[in-house]
Amino acid sequence: MDYVNCKLCPRACGADRTRGERGFCRCPDTALVAKAMVHKWEEPALAGAGGSGTVFFGGCTLGCRYCQNAAISGGPVGKAMDSAGLRAVFEDLISQGTENIDLVTPTHFLPTILPALRPRLPVSVVCNCGGYERVETLRELEGAVDIYLPDLKYADAVLAKGLSGAEDYFPVACAAIREMVRQTGPVRWEGDRVKRGTIVRHLILPGHVENSLRVLDWLGETFAPGEILVSLMSQYTPMGNLPAPLDRPITAQEHDAVLSWMYLNDLQGFTQERGAADRGFIPDF
Image (cartoon, rainbow, N blue to C red; front, side, top):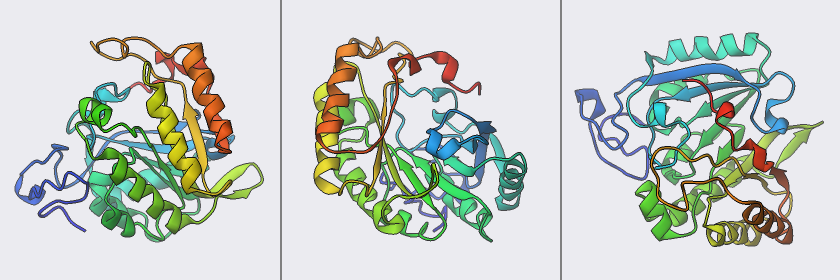
């Protein structure tokens, strides 16, 4: 795994980032840390009382048009760090009492991140990603990640192409999530904290309830109760100049329809109130 002929993500650009070439993510051959913080707003079973030690990386392999973190995901933003610098950031967050190290959109910097995770940290490591991952890349993470926190954004290929430029999102993400679950096994709790397993996030998009129902159908058909957890997110906040219906939050009817479908599929996990759709919850980058 390296930055030469880069194929870390499914875009498989083949850019030689060590020579200054830039692929889809437009990022260099070293990690870019946009923000490191004690994050209290992750799922309670992850953050707990101490919060997550969250490290936001600049750039992204998806580029969703509605991204709440667009200030950092749209390009090469952040402080350049090598593996030793990253390790120091992780240890500083742990010294503040955080309950895990939460790596947000790490895929395009994994050659720098992986050495920083050795030797093993004394807290869980969370891989917080968009779900659009190569199985071959994920296999390099086996043993280094305790909890996978992927999105499963789309079952609709047209929607995935229009909003994230990734028409193949659904089959790629499904294969990735299967690999994540293979690595972590069923969700393992210690008290009220998740210590190992896979938690699949799904953001309800306004006007696209059918997409959400298809996502939940696949999860319910693929995994046994308790094998994964689902985090159903209602926090969609209109960003930029998007056309209707993406120019509004979700409605109560949309929220209730998807929530009911989650329960009908015997999926366990977490849900958000519609009040989570508030710019105040977006970190200040």
